[in-house]
Amino acid sequence: MSGESNCKVKHRSHHPSKNLNEREAQEHSNSWSLEMLLRRLKATEANQDDKFAHVLDAVGEFGTFQRRLVVLTFIPNILLAFFISADVFVFTAQKPYCNTSWILAVGRNLTEAEQMNLTLPREPNGSFQTCLMYLPVAWDLDSIIQFGLNHTESCQDGWIYPDAKKRSLVNEFDLVCGKEQNSESMQTMFAAGVLTGSLIFGLMSDKLGRYPTILMSLLGLIIFGFGTAFVNTFHQYLFFRFGVSQALVGYTISSMSLATEWLVAEHRSHAIILEHCFFSVGLVFLTGLANSLPHWRLLFLVGGAPVFPLIFYIWILPESPRWLLMNGKLEEARQMLCHAAGVNKKTIPPSLLDELQLPRKKVTKASVLDFYNNRHLRKVTLVMGCVWFTVSYSYFTLCFKLKDFAMNIHFRQVIPGLTEVPARLCCIFLLEQIGRKWSLVEPQGTLMCLLILILPPGEDGPRLRWPRCLAIELKSIMVLMVALGEFSLAASVTVFFIYTAELLPTVLRATGLGLVSLAWAAGAISSLMIISQRLTLLPILALFFCSLLPETQDQPLPDILGHYPLQTRNMAEELLAKEVAPEGGW
Image (cartoon, rainbow, N blue to C red):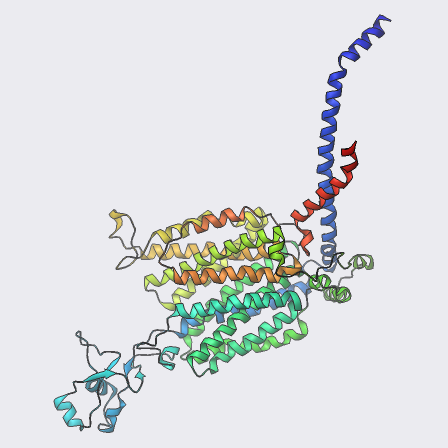
């Protein structure tokens, strides 16, 4: 009995601590159940999103169909580089002299040198003045030679270009002597076309589909790209360049969305990286072509002619099955997937194909206003917009810095083409090892941007800022730094494209890419307007902004706005609140 009483006493003595442990266990159980519920709901959502990925696995992750699709996106990218950078070669500097052919009426046998010697005034150093001529007189040739001409005026009958080796826009439309058009103004016009085209074609791609938007973009390249060779005035040239820039950004956005939605896992990033590599190859191709052709019209004719074979894309380019599914075209999506499986010599199990169902929510109402109304989408767009602006500004600033070194124009274009290919191939290793977000953290790129902006050009060339080094010429070192900076920024551009496309949902992917392309064009325009300023904190701010976004590596592509982690988290909390509401009353 005493033993029993002792047991009872001990039991009673530990009762309060037991109750405390039970409460702690219950609280721990509640927190554990909340965590499990969150995980369960996330897993449920992920499995639902992965149904399409399972179908693509059955189709073949990277079979003949996918390889053909990647090749089809490669070819136009070479032409994109050509049309983007053609302005650099058609605005070659020319030294103009007034056309004084009036003297040939009294001296038909005069050579060009004798004609210029009699009719053009000279500078103090003995060279001919470029924008002035002697006033014509009604004298014979002997009187002109004996007494000379004294009264000058501006050119009346146009200009001649005796030292010109090639026909460019400058001597075609006489863009000299107060009519000059520098390359910065042309690039501003081109960027303005990107601004409008990114928004128009982004909306069009999400509303009409990737396939028709790509075809319309290729049609724009034929009309405004190849057609540039037939313009009759400089204003027509500006209009055609404005139109071709819209077609370029339209193709870029639509092809990026198409490749992102067809390919899975690492094949998606590899394809986009190779696509950008072909863009760099196009820069080298353009440089060689411009160096060999003597006329700017021939440059657009020969360089733009490969656009015409792309007409066969009408019959072989596929539509995105994800876009078809999100827009209520279930049967067309299934037919497209079955066709892809047939090309890959695969068979999709009927049970797996039947799992593809129309989304429970109506997603056709998704619009550009969702970039403001949806909190997570708004954050993604603002952050990526800031990053794209920063990279664009830094990239074009580095490109313009090359002009300070008086380098050959062809060599200046070859440097980006040669450095960007290995830079983008390095992205394959970075993306696989450290993911999308941390691949953007490239200290060497930030260092190059900081140094290149800290080192301003001196009067006779680039010099160090520090007093003891003011007399040291650094042209070769600066060129190397610019090349390394472009190396890093080119890799960043490729990662940004991949990362942004994976962050955006299918229903608004092209529109989102269009909106961040607005920031890219704004950065390009800003680099033209405020190139003398040194915004050295921009790369650091870009790296900070990137840390605010989630990782997308090995994650399912979001199709609708409800697939975002933020929305999933809110749904879980609402579901938990409904389940624990009775317990709260107890």
